Image (tube, rainbow, N blue to C red; front, side, top):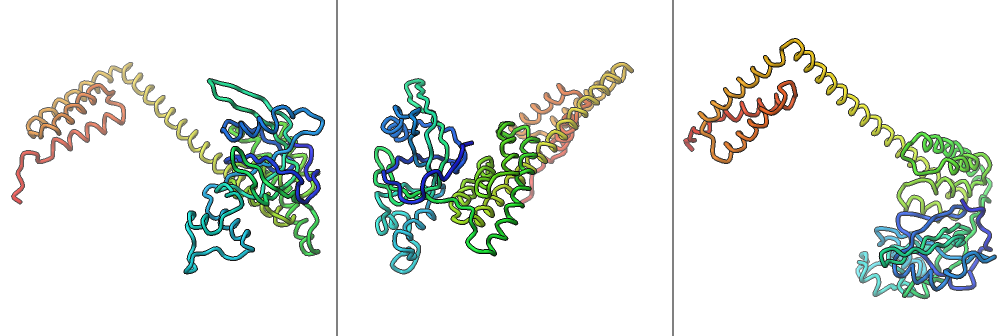
Length: 376
């Protein structure tokens, strides 16, 4: 996790900022992400802006935005905002398709479809260059320092450059009533956070490190509301749109409520995962128990001399079924299937359930009136 956030003064950032797009993940203030960059645009961005600057006294900054899939709603909202909040519709008042939307209400320098315009300004704290099989990749460690809003994309090729403004993540409630609600939701989120830490510790498949869970547990006791909301959201694997709401919330109450929803969703996912895992284990153990008992029964019968009797009885029964199948004069295709299953039944242990199923199937085949012509 990063050391802090909101170290950038809220307001327009003087220089155009290089912007990285990430899929299925989201960077939040006060948290860290390790990014593997291999797309051509990302490699060009790193070469131009960061390759020789990481490790300096003042770490370089990059904008990080998540990709929303599907995208139409985000683009329509952005287009409506660009039009001063007016509804975006066709000549008859109907909704525009994406192509018509692009022609009639284009975003500045055509903002990439599906990109959230609220993202995070990040410090680039570590950068590694990897070349494998002719492909060039970079591994970048980024630390979220402030929320940001993309005002306009000033360049799209060969990589994204944007004019952005830094956004505050204040813990101050807009009114007395909101302050009371913020405290209540904060307390609730602290409890949910502790439940989440316990559930993640108990989940063997969780990818969260133990030391990270210790840090999160500490945050549930001491962290300010917004920091707690961001940190808890960062370890949840719920859909990106749900986590994006935490980042986009402009006041502390909405931010805490959005984070509470994310944490509750993650707890439900972990609970269902635990139930499914328990049921699968129970079924496996039951299957193993039945297999063991069958093996024991077979060994006991063999010891008593009953195993040969059972096998002889099964062979006699299959021989009788074969006679009936021949007498039934099955069509060529059906006869091939029947003989194949008969051969398989003779190889199986008569004590296995599958043997009984095959015998029943073959008896049914023999009983069908294959040679009787229908009067219709």
